[in-house]
Length: 474
Ligand SMILES: [Zn+2]
Image 1: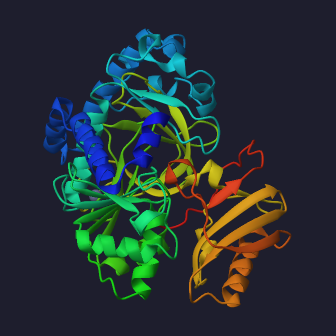
Image 2: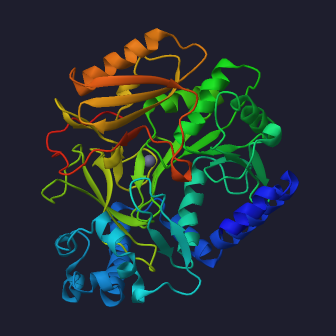
Image 3: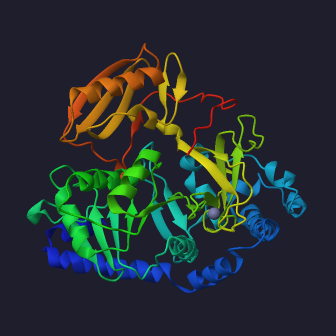
């Protein structure tokens, strides 16, 4: 792999475009095969099915997955009693809820124990997690499961008014534009009709070039990290040389903050549709045109749990626990993903889907900061309220009462921004917090190009209890 990367880096740009296109063609073959068509047909037929019909389908998939895991996955052989599986039925989940929760650490310690039959199947696809918060884990996908996943992606795109055949621009964390020659920070994937934009080179000086490339490409939709798209939006609103209209902006992989959504929508006169999933392939949550986040019941079982392991009622934030129904090569049953969320109180969405709705997704556990006065505090977006002239901010914590703030200034930055930001931070974290503020040119991305607002090096156990938490509106 490393060898291929170094060969790629030596190629002239036009050959790199061909290499990216060849990779794109390979992805298309992986994604849109027979399993895609089968799953897509099922999704179309059940899009407006009743809650009971969906639950019946979900339970039948779940029983099959539990039987498969109990029979073939070393880790689950002792943990899932065969006899309990028939007791699981629509409306009666007690037998399922009695299965112990799988922690991330269990998977990290011994990933091979989660492989069906103790090994990867023929034709399996392997993927390494980014390892931003520990050792990367090699995940194994069954042949066909990636294809099935893309049926969900396609339906999500369609309800946003676009398809895989439309021109798109897409941010990627991969090093697709090595070196800095010619300021061309993107490559063309002609097979997928995609302009692939690198997040690696994204900064104040390169942004106008990105905007020009997008303007010339005229994409019907833009996909990628909210942080990267927000940087573009900031600039596009100030610099009127590049008026760009993009009907749909599909964000994923990071928590989308309300301010980011507003900014992106006004910059590109389009609509943002957020999506939530994981490399572990455990769930597919997507936003419909009424801005409700639906958890697709055929992709995975979503549970939101209180600290005592009981299901959290609507409106109460709890730990997200997922059971994927798609990937048979590496089943994860009742897997605590590390994110926190709350169920919506509504049981019906105007879009007509009877799929359960998630009201609020809080950042990952890793995204919490510690305050000696307030304990663990999540969601740092309120800290940026009323702060103008700031492009990006990162909060780094090494000690309980100290916070380092890295800040990339916009041209209209003034010291007032710093004063406001520090005031907000002290309000949120308590006035005993010492703040070390630094202006920087660029904030480095983590592995996979993901931007992290919070980098906290403190020991996070035990995690705070969630009962009685205030649910922020989304
Ligand atoms: Zn809806």
